[in-house]
Image 1: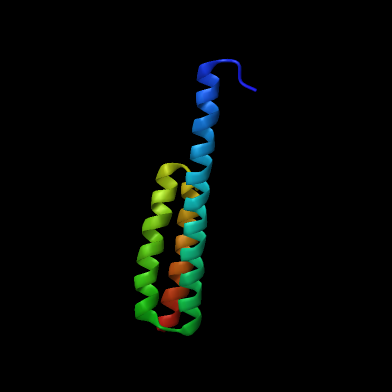
Image 2: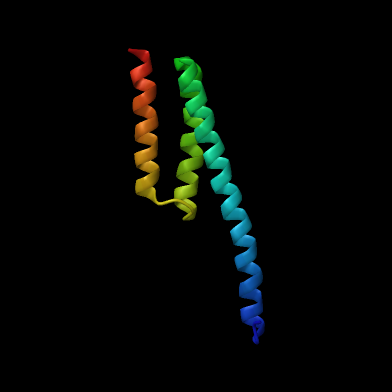
Length: 88
C-alpha cells in the first residue's frame, strides 16, 4: 500500500490509464477484424472505407503510445496490400 499522497494518486491514475489504453487496443483489434471480414467478402469499395477508419484509429493509438509506430505502419501496409490485391 502506498504511504504518500502522491503515490496514492499515481495508483489511481495508473488504473484509469490502464482502462483507457486497453479499451483503445480492443477497439483497434475490432476494427482490424472488420477490415479482414470485408476483405474476405471481396468488396473493394467497402474495404477501403473500413480501412480508412482503422487507419485513423491505429495512428491515434500510435500517437497515444498504446501501439508502437512501426507496428502500426507494418499492419496498415499489410492490410493495404491485401486490399490492393483484391482489385486486380
